Structure formats: structure tokens, C-alpha cells
Image (cartoon, rainbow, N blue to C red; front, side, top):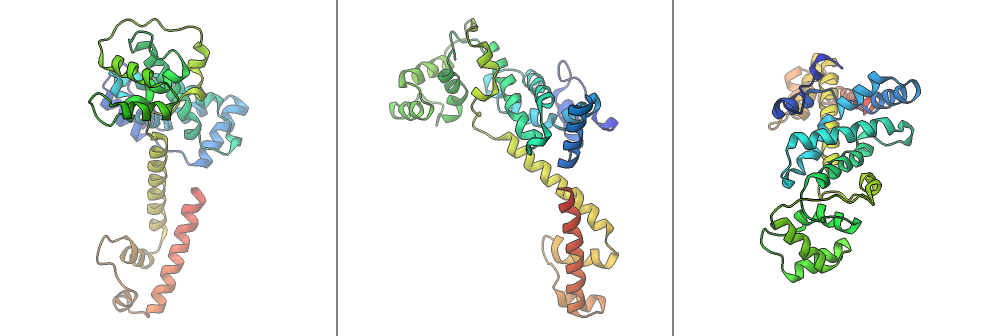
Length: 282
């Protein structure tokens, strides 16, 4: 990692500056990620762990943003999510054939969920698995800010596997005043276990992964174009990269003084080179 990833503190600092710094951190290809994970696992390479964490901090920011509706500071949610990310990096097995982002998302959410449960001050809220499902899904499942109708209550209860009266009670707690919460200690291990949490209704992992893949494709495409000779690059740009008024084979043939078939051959060879370069990385 270069100095561009020297991050300001998310706690007590400027959250926007932190997010901007996080988004500047390089994205790892799957090959780089696997190599770093193996180095951490086999050699205890702390620098490899550092790079894995830094390259995925943007995922934590995206996940934490989905929980702002609970009234807790974004910086605190990010900080807790970062703890989950570090736990995921420590436990990640590169031989399972999945990307770190898919594995880490559960640990990130688990830490954020636990933080919300500790700090959202509602009496006896979410003390069972079913109530926790209800707690983390009711907001997104409500169709409006108004009080739910009986039909809506029944639908939510059926989808989440809880009683209709529990849905009504939880909705009432959401709209009522905050009072002190005494966290339950009987199932503390259950609360910290990622497998018992549902998603919050969005899929930030998929969104961030798609953004990473798109950025990698863009970067490698630019590298591939730069490696082409001037004529080949001009043909590819004129045929494929213009937003409008793309050129035909015959127009380029007239412009460059060769046959349309020769333009097609040059184009095909350039496209094959670009595909092999991008495909080798992704």
C-alpha cells in the first residue's frame, strides 16, 4: 500500500475525510487477495493483513450507511464494522474459493448489530432470535411511516416467523420514547455469532463488489488501450468507445486508406489482445 492509504481516525475526526481516504485505497485483484491471505495464514505476515483490511474499508462504510436509521453516529457504526472486518481477515481461508468481501460481510454486520443492540435503549427489545429478526427488518418492511394495518402486521409476522402481537409491540417500541435497556446475558454468544443475523434488506457487499469489478475492468481496459499501436487504438475507440457517432468499417477504411476487411482484421486482433489482458487479471 502506498501513502495514499494513510487514513485519518474515524473516531473524533472528519468522517467525510475518512471516507474519501478509504475510497482512494487500491482495490485488490483476486490473485493479489489470495496471495496476501496465504501469506497471513502461512507466515503470520501482519503487513499482508494490513493490506487486506485497508482494501476493504470501503465495504464497511457502505454497510454502516445502511444502519443510519437507528440514530447512532456513522463514525461509531464504521468503527464497529472495522472490528468485524479485522476478525474476518484473521479467519479468512483463501482456499475456499470465495472472495474476502463475501466472507467479511457477515462479520461486519455482526459487530454492527451487536453495537446497535447495546446502544439502542429500548426496554427488553430483541431478546430472542425472532425478535432480533423483527428488530433489524421491521423498518425496511414497513410500507409507510403510518401505523401498520392488521393486514400488514400479519404479512410481516408470517414472513419473519413471529406472532402478529410481537410485530405490533415492536412497532410501538420504535415509535415510543427511549428508556434504559438491560442487555440479556443468557445468549451473548448467540448475539456475536454472524450466522444468526439476517441481512438488513440491502446487499452492500454485492454493490461494492460490482463497483470494484467495474473499476478493475476500467483500469485494465485503459492499460490495454495504451499498449496498442496508434492505428489499432484509433479503430477501437472509433468503433466501440464513442457514446455516439461510432464509425463503420468503410468510414475507417476511407480515412486510413486501407480496405474494410483490413480494418476488420486489425479490430479483431486488438479486441482479442484486450480480452486476454483483462481476463487474465479478473
